[in-house]
Every structure is written in structure tokens, then in C-alpha cells.
Figure 1 (cartoon, helix red, strand yellow):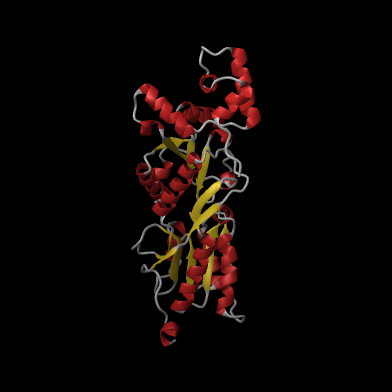
Figure 2 (tube, helix red, strand yellow):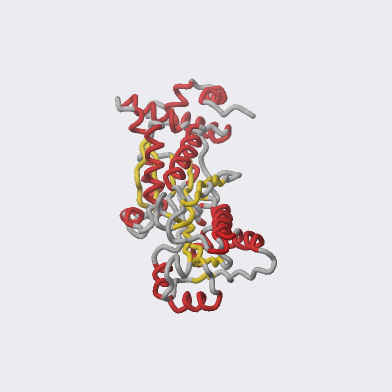
Length: 350
């Protein structure tokens, strides 16, 4: 593997001193415009890129500030409001931030929250603002709206995405293993004696997660035997009470699996179903360990910590822009016992 191009290589190619190359990159006045253009052209031709960590260290020395004050990472959210991620019913966003912030501090970095739509900024202005502040590492929180398009000056940043966000899927990502989570849930339901587990999800969620839940549900159905006709998944635009009630009557699931907290749980209760006596309830996005909801824990803090590590590693390798081979790191889900499923008589007999 070839060594990265150094400032000394650029100096040799342009027949100037290393100091002149440094001054040209810093746009210093004591370098002529002709020399500066020649140096910058050589940098582009040779593929030289300034290491952001070295640049931050030099800036801190010149300003007599702490080096860590210049090593700032951006935690970027794209909710409709600045605090949308802080007030959202799901704590996963806050957990991711807490985990990433703690890991950044351990690595002598600082993590700052930045709202994508601050002061009505366009993506371009937002990008320029981050660059002006010397921020070169960007951690993107999950984007709530699938139609949100994000276009920054990507070559200026090292970028890692939290969760599965369609508009930034071409970057390295850190997320829950949603496929494995569904396999785990289906196995737990089978062990409890449930015969008709039914999957229910909003279409936007299913699309965001690249249909990993549905795929694993169909694969896991084979464990119930060839004769078992499991309920058809309920995939809807919104949780409409009549539609959910009709699905419960038609498909007769004995346990409902999905992102059940909130409207779906309320609709099941409104249909006269007692949990877990009449029907089981399994969450695919259980908010925290020890929660009353049985299901899969996402462990947002671990995801945040891992994402911060990945981002810092990119910065220290001076890797910026859109990666040629984006990698998705997945965290295995863990089962939370909870109180919304029960062991059925058939399972006790086995």
C-alpha cells in the first residue's frame, strides 16, 4: 500500500521549501499568488490532503489554546425542530448522543449538537458553517423524514451515520441488527408457546429498515412447521384503529410483534385485548433494560460509542468524503424479559 503524499513530497515537486508549502495552504500573504497557485496545483495533482488533526494542533499552538478545544465532532440532527430529538418519545436518540459524547470525551474530543436547519440554513450554508468552525467529523443521527435529502460538501468531512437513514446510506453506518432481532423474537415467541405471532409495522419504518424485519419474519416462520399458516404482516401507512382491529379479527395473532409502544398498543387495548392474558405484545424497539415491554433492546449508548470510535478512526486516518466501500456495523439485539408475554400451557407441557 502506497504511503500518503506528504507536504515534503509537494515541496520537492514544486522546488520550494516545506515552509512555503505550509504558507501556501494557509493562504499566507508572504507567498506570491503565482507560487501559491503552483503549490495548490501540485497538491491536487499528487493527491495531498491536509490532516485535520495536525491542522487543529497547529491552530491551538498559535492561539495558545488547549489542543482538544479544536477537536470537535458534530452530532447532526434533522428533526423539524432543534430539540425534536430530545423530546421524542423514543429515547434512542438521546441514548446515542450520550454514548457518543462519553466515548468522544474519553478520546479527547468534544461532541456538539448541530441542527441541520439552523436559522433556515441551506445544506450548503450549514456545510460552510461546520468548515468555518474547523469541524471535520460528522455523526448523523437517524433522520425522521425519509424524504429529507442531505447534501454537504462531503470531501471536507469524515462521516458516520447512526441507524439506517436512507438519504445517507452511502456512508459507514452503525445500527441495530434488525434482521437478527426479528429472528430472536420469533424464537422467543415459539419457546413461550405462541402459535400465531403477527408482525405489525408502519410502512415508513419498514422502508427505513430496508425490510429486514419482514425478511426475517418470513424466514423464521419455517420454524413453526410447514402446516403453520402464520398471520400476514400488517404494514400500514398510519395506525388506523379500524384497520388494526380488522387485522386482529381476521388474522387472529396470539402475540403482536413490532414497534408497539404508543398508538399500536393503545389500539390493541381499545379492541378489548388484555396484555398478556388475551394477547402477547413484543417490542422490536424496547427503550431500556428492565422495561415492562418484552422484546429486543437496541442499546443506543453502545451504538453511539461504537459510532464515535468509527468516526475518530476515520479522522485519524484522514479519510473524508463518500467511501468507495461503505460498511454497516450491526449490534446484536438482546432480549428484555418484560411483562407483556407469558408462558402458554403448551410450552409448559413441553
